[in-house]
Length: 373
Image (cartoon, rainbow, N blue to C red):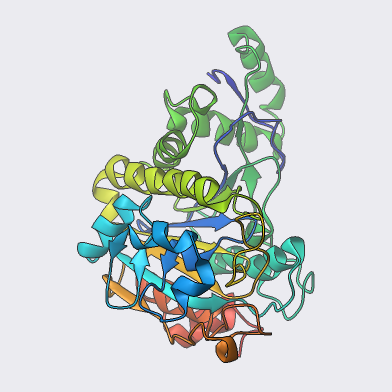
């Protein structure tokens, strides 16, 4: 029985009231799990993974530099934001890897265009209709090729020929059991709607007693993701959309809050996935970074390169920071204002996920990132 939730079939979700991030899922015949957390709004990689060892950092960041220095020092150059306590622990346990000065092929500063490039990996914004995660699904075994999105719309990264349905929580009153039975009977003879309805009921059963409408933040979201990825019939690939990263004003407190949510989500996934954590990789990335220098309202503006984070029990070569550091001195900046990109997002994903799934890297790249040479 669907309890306190409403599933709209055929790829659309009802208006959910989940105040935590929206989520998208896709299933594949493999016991390995992959979760992509996108930071919509351009997350400040220079605060998330602060280059406190760079001589130019303190002067460029002013008062914001002090907060950055209070986090976990990972090596002689980088310090992790203090809100990422679980991230620091996982790094010590070689279950986290951080990449810096990373970007997609996009070099402008539009959120919408940058997010589209990050999700589709095309040569320009809106050049492709399919997303790189959907292309990844095509490489995985086809026995369980159903896809499920918990979101009001399917994110571009999951769009493509592999079918994706959607699921979203709702605060609408509980559906009457007699009504649900009549709907099931109505759909029973329909070749298209019958399996979709059955999938909806099965998804609700996997969600269990988790009710994200009664909770906010990373913990509730993490519990919902873990419940929907549990068991033999659970999802195997997920996408989580997070917002709040566009920190033009009063960045310090706002960024700390959203990073805490990410940290809580990771911590909950580690605990609630149980043994499946050992077969899980989580990627956290954003469309572009923010300016090196702080603006007049204690925030930062749209930039270029940022930082990305990988977590999981299946993470190959964890406990490392991958960065060809370009430096923050005036002559080292991109367009005299931004962190210069020295690593492509596509290269990081190819290395991490080809190892995770045991796919030859060049085959992975040709299929998942065909426009990236």
